[in-house]
Length: 329
Image: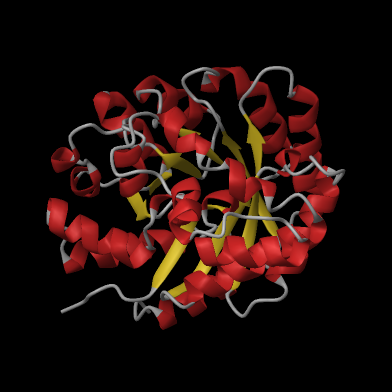
């Protein structure tokens, strides 16, 4: 019977993937002081079990992000995170980060991109990069710069492969970014868009109309059957992240988590961690969580991995290799 034990991670935020061990190493090489008590450090890095809101969840990003404000810190974070998830059975990953959030100590967005590229060159894991534009007020110029950097560094494999939109979805509606993604489409840039997490199906509809290959989360798509039909019609992959959705209260009743329903309806679902360090999870644990919670079957796990291969922002050569490694060929 098929059981997933090797994995593909398509939705992983760098700043959310810093574990306590990684934080200590990043602090050591940059001469940054951290709490000596391991429990106190864990509390700063990890969402509490009774997390009450998205804002409480987002507070946990402050420390890891502060450890990636230099070229050395960012490059080493990429390497350490890649090596960590490789040890957990991940064989291909796409790391996403917002270059505009790494300038507190003088790095430019391009410096940040170059540092991350250095990091993926120093690990044995196959890793590609997704650059995030950010929802917000007054950062239009920064987003335009990110867009230009995606175009400048865009490759099919082994580097920057796509663009994303992340941030406060409920405060800054997806529709506001229509023009940004129209430009990306004209430039031939592949992209994914966070939608249907903090806002509902209308946000997913707007994102789907922009022409993305994938949508980050999309967990609330089922609130509107027409949106489900639209996703299916357009062949848009969903990057679902169950533990994250529970902790941020995107889904209040996890016993009704819609992943199996979406699979049965023919949606192209993938399974991911989102912020594995902050959430205290691994991709293997996400698969086991779905087995226990919603009865995810071996056949469904195989479908999820096939979807991940097909939806990955990578070359056909790498996809063929992934299929062989996963026993899907």
